[in-house]
Image (cartoon, rainbow, N blue to C red; front, top):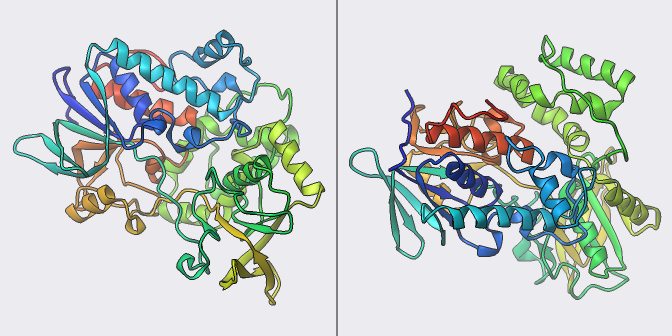
Length: 458
């Protein structure tokens, strides 16, 4: 039987981005345990990387009507938006605006908590058990915090260096690991070429940022399949999700989606599976999940995570003007060439590589989840101690249905939980706001012994 925290207990949330901040807010709303929320960068508090590093040109890829942070109050964000004169439920708002909404929500929870919710700036590098049921967290600066429970809200791990690239062998400033860097276009001229490694949402962000920073040269975005996100339809009617998951295996599901797409269009065919996607994933074997990741994930991602119409129009304009090229291919090598790099990449289906002289190469491969390749001190410590383990597909942290971390010996730990994108191995759909808000709500209710509270996810 999982242990339930009491109001006198102390929960430490490691990571104060969207997942961690929202979880802390929900604990306060349920009158649960006191909370210490630890985030190493104040500017990312409540916002995380997604909303703190955004440029005003970066828009949410979901309409405001489905972006409430509170699952029991679906209209909360829309009311906030209208009160600030920034749009209505149909608006694709800037991510900076959504970040301001989240920070305001957290600040209000802290102010109303009577000291039961506090923010600590710093980095946790170790979590160790102590006598009894407690744990001790050690900070990078030597501080320690005693607690009863830790909730890991680590967000996404930084992307790995793409195959074929050796950043240390390239001239300074050529390789950029941060696609949202404020100086992404610094030092670049109209005759330069920037190579984006990846063609998904991260690459779209980088291309828009380069354009906003005044870069007039050529942008080459390349990935193995060359797939890029589709666009939302303006004025698309609301759809009802399916009530029951389609029967049969993966082949039957593909047949179901194709049939629905023929009648309602592919957008509706994908969207209506949202209520049952986690059930479909849970029912699939590890073999089927692995096949999905190898063969279908890129296609799922570009149909599932779409672009706001205004963003899609800007991307289309860049393509039509010749300033942006999206290509399917694989990087072979990159070598120093003065202040630039000679990049060799092989277009899909061809044998001979193409040579591109790149002034900047930007890693847009997106977040990763393989714990064994992480350089994060806390992740390395917990793995070495056997306190956590990778999920079977190496998408993140292995957890059970109660969000408890699974130890190396296969047993769940009541003292360490994990929420957010790093639990995608068990849930798959847990990277977007609608999914994370339900997960954080459910765990907050459980740790507050407030399962009687109504709301989404009950």
